[in-house]
Image (cartoon, rainbow, N blue to C red; front, side, top):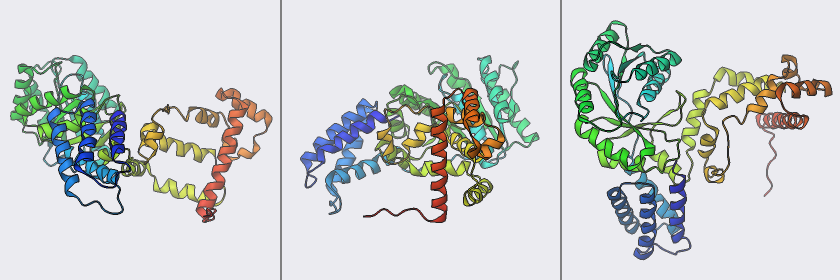
Length: 436
């Protein structure tokens, strides 16, 4: 997401490159291009107009620091305004209550039911909560089954009454069930339609009035662009929801919804969905999103993802093995599994400043480690611990078992040995210094 917008903004800032100072003329020329880039990204017209006016006011009112070039100053002003446009700071979910009740709303196909599972998984695994998911879509039998499948995958119970056609009653009964069974979070998945209609609005408004939720989250597909913003406004007028969830941010979308929705409905974006897996959910951070839009990466999110998978005990164990030159293919395989748990490889790489643009046309598949894993899994436990024993016949057996060739295996063995040497040097503090 945002690749096209990032490129367009970068081109816009080049107008100021080489200019000695910011003037009304060159700022106007730059911002005309910025506004066009925002409109092409499907940003709301009024939002784009107000945004560029605010950027102009701030840019003209600032003294250009001697250490900054005009285009660098403009990038900073645009960055700060983008972050403000998307909310300024991240807003956490309200889980206070006994139980805390979260009502999900949105159109059919927005990813609402899947996100219900993702949210339950996050609250359980990262906040230590005991959630209950509630199936209140009485029109689509597949929705109840879908929620139950998700519940099984994350080991979270699902409350449903397949024969009851009153969504309000189901929600009320679920709250009673939660109180009796010690659930401190209740997430109510409601019915969606292909378009906003009166029946749906009346039903979800009745559920809200009955169960008085702490949070009402509006789930919207980011790929629907301005339609997403218009739908959000209609829902907010009726429900006065507390936060927005943007799903499918990993898709081929221009990003207009993410940039417009906060200013139109004046409600914070709280979460984003970034993939199909049940752990593919992130809190929304306006500053970090502004960084990514302007090609600055998102190193903070990358570090957080790494920390989530960081196992202190495992790190100590591996560190000792490196010190003794005993790091083997078993350890290497364990490290690969931790990297894979962090998410999509291309998304992770794009969080590193300067890398996103360099790899935008590179196809980094999620199965990039497939051949490496196949080779290691074709080794015996003894061979993994003692790769130096790999002679010609052993190598032939491994290649046959992994569907690779001798060149692939030899390349991996060399890379593995080079990596072991580098790790030992880093740990011992003997990394060679670059000569200036």
